[in-house]
Image 1 (spheres, rainbow, N blue to C red):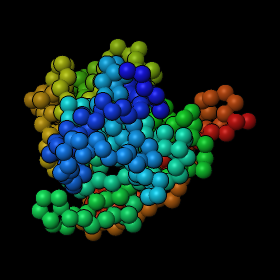
Image 2 (image 1 turned 45 degrees about the vertical axis):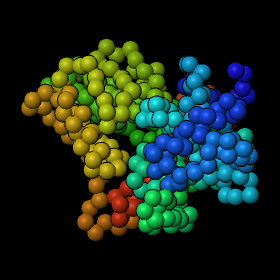
Image 3 (image 1 turned 180 degrees about the vertical axis):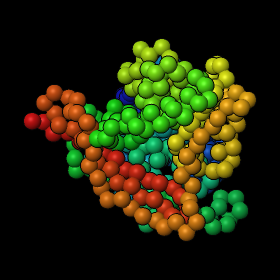
Length: 366
């Protein structure tokens, strides 16, 4: 079936809606997980559902490029309301990274093609997957937009958290939109030398053996440093773009294996590891998910092996604080005729222990 393509990447396309999609959309609303995620139940029958006019300023189906399957939909609220982006991912395709990928694409389309300068999105406190997705796509909490609703089943008060993505005044480099996935190419533009940090992890690992596991590795820079010095390293990240960038940079190292994987549910065919470290455990949102991550790590760690984690957990009496916008340059400019840099600001929530970071990438021709 021929469809207009609004925006696409290597994995997914956002394409026009057809009447043939309505059955899958309707059945998705009958899924208890969808109802829970939206705090809402649709009571109309299929004919009533399909008779309604689509009023969103943008509505598109999510198509999987490899198979042409329609796996969900995205939509932005009607023009007379605050721009709010929502996603519906059909059940068989959840928890595989498609939602984050599609949400990033829709954000890109909203900012560039629809010229929406501020885009909102909502999530409930128990919807851990959506909270993670919004963070990865560059959305930051917007407490002023939080709303109190009635629970769709119990009638109890529930809070819907509001998040916002703001289009910056600077030019986004090479069509990037500043989210975690699209930040892969600019990940190491911190402007500082990391050899000392890499060496610290290398020496710690060497005291336990040669086989190393690094979850949540981003592009795998530290793993590459270890592999160059004789270690056998398996490093993984949930974001395909980060792993792809790592393979471009370090794919020729025989001692380094880079995989795409979720720390909450990974299993690799590798020898038991002697040492595992993770500096991003603070990004895991609940104690149950921490237990899941530790269980997965445990299946790969040899008896007597060593695990080191940095939790980022809230300290007693911690206070909320904000770091003003800072500018970071790569140690050397990497594109001929273009000066590049990134800007970032950070907010630490003393009550929850969460850290929220907003990063933009910029360029200037000379």
